[in-house]
Structure formats: C-alpha cells, structure tokens
Length: 124
Length: 515
Image 1 (cartoon, chains in turn orange, blue):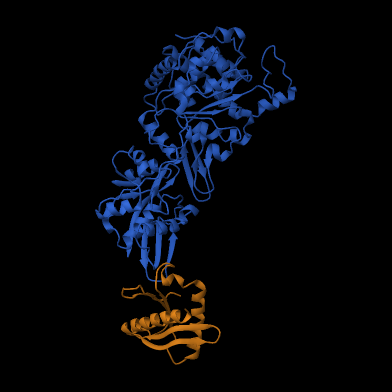
Image 2: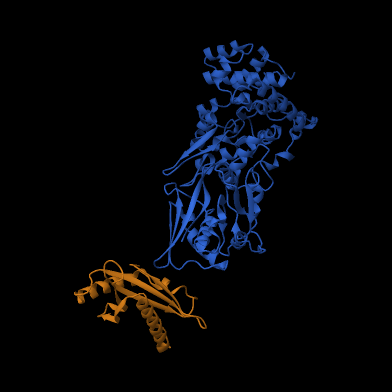
C-alpha cells in the first residue's frame, strides 16, 4: 500500500518535471531535504521572465476527485513550511538567483484518461 | 475569466442594484467573497459551491474572487445566492457571458441546487424595473409576486439547473419547486368580522364610524368584557379598499416582512395587533444590521391595535410618537439608515385600573387610588395627546344583551365611510392629504373655513382643558362628523360633539346625530 502511494507520487512528480521543462524551466533538484523541516518536491530556475527566479514547487497527485482537487490539499501550514524551505534553499545556494517563487502543481490521474496538470504560480 | 450578474440590495423598502462579479484567476483553490456581506451572505460561498457541483457543474479549482459592488454598501440576506452562482458559471464558461444582460437575479440556493423563496421579492423587482432592467429571475412560487410589477419579464425557476438550461437554450429539466412556507399576512380575517355581531355600545360604534371615516386615532377605555377588542377588530372592515399606490406600498412592506403575496397585491387595509410583551424593535422595526419592518410598518395604511395598552413597556408606546406625526419611521444603525412607511391608524385599549372597575358606576373598585393613577399614567401624556377620539365604555346591562336587536352591518357603515371619504378627497384635492386625520394644523386653520362653534374649542384651550394640538384634533373631528352627515361645513353641534369625543366625556352626554 505504502509503496503504491509512493509510486503514484513519484509518477506525478515525473509529469510535473516534464511540464516545467516544457515551459523552459531548468530543474535543478528533486526531493531536496532540509533536516527535520521537510522536503521540496522540485526546485527549478526560471529564466523566462525579466528577472531569474528560483521556483520551489510542490506537487500533489491524486487518482480520484472524491477528496477534492489535489491543489485543495495544500494548506496554510504546508505553505508556511514551503516558505521556510525556500529560504533554506537560498541560504544553501548563495550563487543562484536571489528571487524565490513558490508554485504548486496538481496532477489528477484518472484511469483510462490522460493525466490533468494544473499549474498555480506564485501561491505563497 | 471575469463575469458579472446583477442582484438587488434592499435598504428599507428602497432597492439598489448590486453588481456581482466573479473572477477566476491563478492560485491555490480558494473562494473569496468581498463587498461587505453579512453572515448569511458570507455563507453563500458554501451554499453556491454545493449547489453548483450538485447541479453537475465543476466549481473552479483556482482562486475565485467574488465581489459585490458598490463595495461600500453593506449587504445582507441570502437572496444573492442565485446571482453569485450564475456569475461563477458564466466565468467558468458554463453559460454564455452575455445571456444575463439587463437581468436581475433573486433567490436563495439549497445545497441540491433548488431555488428557495426569499423575502422582499416585490420591492427588489420594483427597484430593478426602475433601474431599467428588463428581466427578473425569481423562485418559481414567487413569480406571481414579482409579476405584480409592470414593465419587466418575470422568469420563475425551480432550480439552478433550470437557469443553466434556459440560458444555454437546452431543454429545461423538470424540478419540484420549493414551496413557500405559508405566512399569512395580517388583516386577512377582517372579512368575517361584522359590526352587527356587537351588541349595544351604539355610541362606541358611532365613534368607530367617525374614526374609520377620517382615519382618526382612538383610545378605547372601559371595564373588561365591554367589547373593546371586539369593536377594534371590526375597524378594518369599515375601511375602504386601498388605492393602487397604497396597495403597492403595503405589499412591498409585507414582502419584506416575509408575508405570502401569491394572492396578489394587498388591497385591504391590514390589521396588526401585537401582544403587549412586544419589544421596541418588533414594533418600530430594526435588527442588528439589516433593518426589518416592524408592526407599525406592517400596519401601514391599516390599523395598529394595542390591546391592554398600559401593559406595554413605556418606551414601546413612546416610540410611536414620531411615526404617528410623520407617517414614516427611520431606523438608524451603524452602517445604514433605513426608512419604512408607517402611516397607521392607532387604536389603544385600556382598563381604567388594574382590577378594571374604577370607572364603572355601581361597581366596586378594589384598587388603591394611587394604583389607579399609576395605571392611567402608564400611557404617557404625549401619546394620549396624539389620540383624536377617547371612547369610554360602560359594561353591558342585561336588558341590552337580551334585547339584542340586530345592529347595522359593517357593509352599511362602510358605505357611509366611503361617501365621507369622497367628500374629504374632494375638499383636499389640491393637497397631498386624503383624509381629515392627516391634515396638518396650519392648513386646517388657514385654508379651510372655521367650523361653526369653533369658539367652544378656543374656550376650552383658554381654560386649559385642551392643548393647542387638541384644538386641531377637535377641528379635524368636526370636519369628519360633518362629512358623515353630508354637511359642507361643521355645525355648532358637530363641533360640540367633536369636543366631547376628543375629551372622552362620560357616555350619555353625547347626542348621536346622523344626517
């Protein structure tokens, strides 16, 4: 059961990384851990805008909508953790861009259908 | 995507158009409702979400901002649900953006997507028509109420799914409508009460006729069981039908109070008789943020009967003073100032003392003199002074009860009242007033010929037996007595009779006189 859930999450992250790369972002880390604080699913650098930005991206993947849209599962507390993680990343990587953005990508995997990705930019 | 629809904010009986905007933007799924909503309106978010999803349409999984404009006007109530849901559906592309132009939407949504009736449909529809809107969507069972307004198309619907089908041009599904909870308007039972049922009390019946003809306020004074309540409840039956303007005004107030208007406009004068435990807010109107009409506004163009008047809280009675003069009531709260019409005819009834026997000859009153005085003083002087007719009742005697000659029917008295009203309208046709009871003192004294015997009233004023306002009241009554008798100007006897009625002289001193 546990491994199944992990594999669903892994698959969702793969799809999210593909989506970010399609948009022209450079993925620089996956599953970056910071002590007890937690983990960032994907870290990317966005040079498509006027100013380069580090994108700290949370990926939520669900195989049904019975419990609502995956993006609805990103709570205020989760956003707070993401903000702290983003600050830690910038401290750890002083040579990268100083500007940080937090994105969220919701992936819905329904059996027999193409995966649906929803990309919300600058959520926190 | 941005879409907008229209609804109506009600401040008193006045309606203002409110634009409901829905914006679907990026961001985490969240629904924000801004524009000074009250609690019932704020919860509309959650009702609309359930109603939309249960009607088979997705609720946007993004940041959804709903704005009610003008943003500074406080908004209250659940009737914005339909406009909010429609704006969201238009913003998410379910219905065409331009399908709701010049259309006002009114109605509360159930979680199943069915439309529920809301108070205030009539004044809201009136406001929409005046603002140039051509179509109003209302809950199905309230379509007849909205249809009372000329110049707008009324679309009565049972559910949100019916609205979507209607706007997309799809076949409209069949849905069981939510029925009205039946709240009967006051005054509907006046038809069955006839003046012929009242035995004896000929003088009081005559006073009632005068009160009906001139819209004079009355104070009924007498021992328990003499027929005060019986008589007061027969007053609306003597009054003529409301004219078109009044009917619309009264119906608008009743719609706000949540009374059922499916039977059409209110055309009979309402009769409201609140219990003496009533609070000030229930009588004059009010509420914490939204102002609701009180008993005096529900009795607009009708009768407000306060039985056992001394038992009412003194501040309740004194709150009647301003509306009695102005015919409207203005309720101020921190965020809004609502005005309701309140041109009611006041009838007070009271026992002379706590045991009820003080004024009855031959009966033994067991109350201490101080107690009798205290009881009488519970109706303050300023309120008493605004009453035109003071009518004292005597207990019925055996001979009167047994004789029981069939009295005059309400219909016959009402005919005389209609004639007297016609004379008044003719005399007052250049003025904004229609009955003697409404005519202000200066007009009465300057623009109408003085009644014969006016000196009687002036003498009473000199002796301190009548206030300055009392003189005007005597003149008004004298005119009504003359109108009932078909005279062009009050005679000396009319004025003497008016003075006695105003001062509530002991029964027996009045001479009944019908021309």
